[in-house]
Length: 231
Image 1 (tube, rainbow, N blue to C red):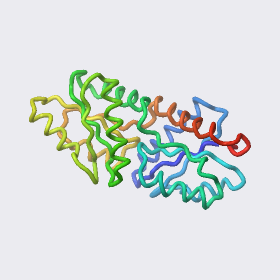
Image 2 (cartoon, one colour; image 1 turned 135 degrees about the vertical axis):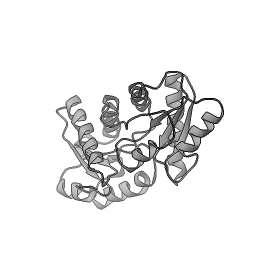
Image 3 (cartoon, rainbow, N blue to C red; image 1 turned 180 degrees about the horizontal axis):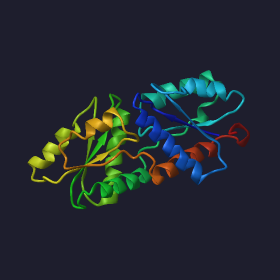
């Protein structure tokens, strides 16, 4: 069983987006039981989901784009409390080339010209590991696009998207595209639209490449544990 763990939000659109992504995952692999839960602000909670699955041993796939506090502390603690080994936790989704594929498609959908420099707007974090993951994702996207991508952070770190866009515009690049490096709509996605960039992409949401990545992370974790423990 795959238990997808999303961050959670008070915004109903964010929860709807997560459920839409998991519908694509189920379409890609209909024989695999897939459930979802949330770390905060939405139901079911991770603790409730694990309690409901007592007697089963799901693999947790974090719907998180970087390796921050939740992945290093909260999720292992929840597994331990449920009597599940650490091996039942898959890596964060990002950074990964499949996310670069999804981001590139979102840029095309936004109408941004292919020569425009790009700012990659991550959620931001006080965790250096999470910030490094965003920088790595900017590199992967730049490699796919064949042009520069500047990492930026919507909270807790600099440059902010507005600062990064302004720097590029001051350097003679008025046509800047902002790639929203978020899974779902909500507070940070709304903040991304205020960067001053002429083009801002939609969140990644239920892009097929993200769904494939969810299954890839599941398969990675599944391969690392005994078959009898991965029901």
